[in-house]
Image 1 (tube, rainbow, N blue to C red):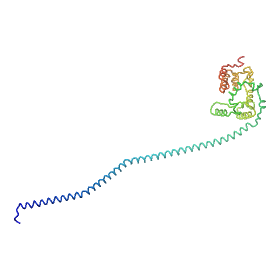
Image 2: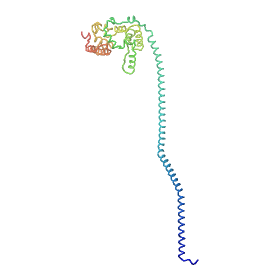
Image 3: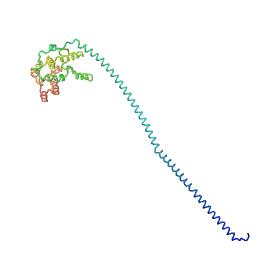
Length: 338
């Protein structure tokens, strides 16, 4: 086909190239379309993958956050529980120790109480035996027996004695005279405690017991004599009134200068009958019974008188005015006046 020229060849080549371009465009277009079609599912998948990764990351972050926020408190709670457990054990140990100590103290106290009880029983039995032996052979206490034992030669009825003298004697010698039945338990306990725990001695003799000592027993400072006096004082209160017991005391008390009884004392020291004594003289005479050898001195007797007046005022036997006036009274002895 030699009749074709160059222009025709060129046309043919351009046409082929054009066709090739068109086919390339079509293929490219088809490839792009295919890619687009293929790309759409891939994009959805990647999104899902991305969301999955994000979700996993979120879970991991949450887990890390939970670990950071909660691991330490959990450890703290564990430490607190452990500390509480240790403290509980320590408290339990202390309680057990206290309980053991308490039980030990209880055992010691019980042992001491048992020993004291046994000792008390022994002393009680011994005391009962000693008391029986002390009062064995004692005469029966009667009014007649007591009257027959009077020492004073000048006996005066209680009705003739001034009330101030009776009150003075009761105030200084036995302030609960009208309340007890011969033995003052309060004074007795106080006397025992004082004599055991101090260097001083204190008596607990009631007026009733002093009547027994003056008339029925003796001046011996023995336990046997004291027990007899207590026994006799109890017996006196069964057969005599308090005024009768006080009358026996007032008629037989020793006042020094060989003077027994209030009547003799009033005559020796004041040159008067006992019924004529005033408040100051009654208080001075009552005060002398404690230690006649000492109080025969007027200066010492005056000091003792003030104590007696104070007790009378304290117990309500005299008023403020009577107390001041009697205290201001010189109350001289007969011997000083003469």
